[in-house]
Image (cartoon, rainbow, N blue to C red):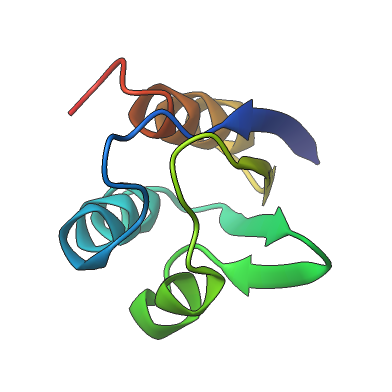
Length: 86
């Protein structure tokens, strides 16, 4: 398992469009990917699950991935959530 805690740097946080992009990025990977925030663990490939987190800019989230491309998956989502890749 690979995991990393990141601070969300998306200006509008994780509202509908950014969540859709995040789910699309997560779905490109074979690994199981979860985001954890304030005791909630959500499948990063589930749009409804991701919307339920209601994360805003400046909040911390832990990305967890397990599978054949887990490191790439965590790195990819980290780049997106920190605003280094749109």
